[in-house]
Image (cartoon, rainbow, N blue to C red; front, side, top):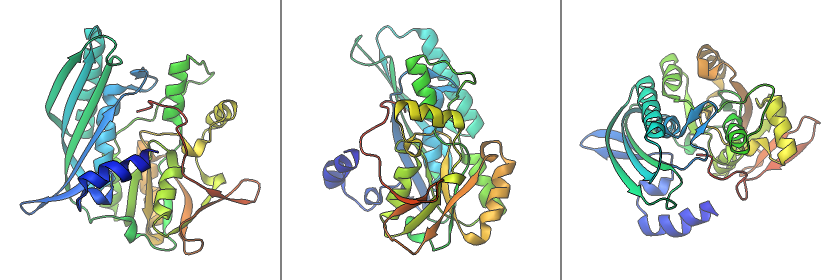
Length: 319
């Protein structure tokens, strides 16, 4: 339904060559420079969760949208909508978290806005961020993908959504589950510096890995993935069975899918494994000339099934 809304209303009314590409960032030219420009809003509930908070999430989400577009993130804006009665100590904690993550990512928050609404007109705090980066890499698109290219992810999937669920429902686990929220720009830089040929990237947020792969395949590319190689913690699998979730559709905030040339697959994995955010990276599949427009998954029991987009939303307000 979100896709329908974007296509039938926003894209219809705002249509232009930059927006029509529907990328994680708009790639624009300004006086000889190529820029990436993106924006995102964050309404996560609860605002503090294992491994992060709405402040860290807002910085990481915007940095990652720029980074997977091939840009070097430079500047962020921050707009706050605050509910009357929000404890100032909570706001201080959130702003400190944003400042720390911006420092870690090497970007600056250079402009912003603050609005306060009456109690009950907002749930504690909503944050909007926009980001600008310099496009230093080649313009990536799904049109660059070739048969035989490797599909990589940089670690375990689903941690963020289950961490939100655990905080929201006050669930207790033997081993706590923490959100994977993190800025990926330094890890991605390492891949470029090493000479990895990256055809395409997306950060794996709402809709999970399955939704992203189906969007890529919609451009008439065939995709074959192997369930046994998809990194998902046993604990996450168990929770999914209890709640009826499919782990392939779980949201993440520190994971990206990277499609790289077959020739640089081994190099990419070697580089990722050297970085803290990529030490559990795996190749989960290949681009195929067979079955264009479809994502097929070889299951652990030996069969093959079709992977579709997520219909509905497994857990609302996760970012």
